[in-house]
Length: 129
Image (cartoon, rainbow, N blue to C red; front, side):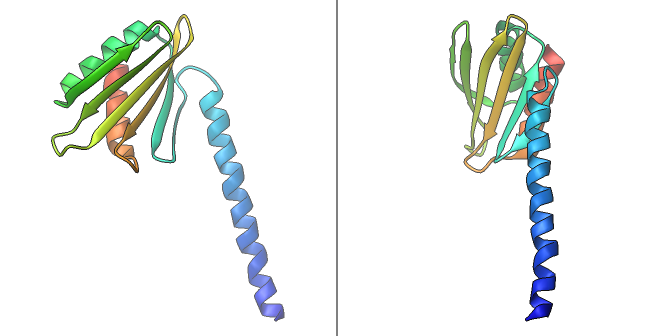
């Protein structure tokens, strides 16, 4: 019985370290423009650009990657751009105005997320800003 207890403490400690690490990622994402985090299948980034410029850059990124633009719903405070890959995977890009020159971007590819494609889309958006 004593041998089993000895194994429990490292596992609990590892679990606590994992939780602390997640908090650091969230804190980093909230730190300001330029912060990027990928959690639970969604990439979240904050860019130092007005929402109109980010909308234009996002549409250009979709064209650059030869994705199919499905819909665009944008106003002065938020936006939702939907695209699709050649294989029919949905891509949702949500935009939120944080201030005049700061926009929050959320990218989700498919139901479970695709980190590589999300990061590629974000890099193409940044290149167009």
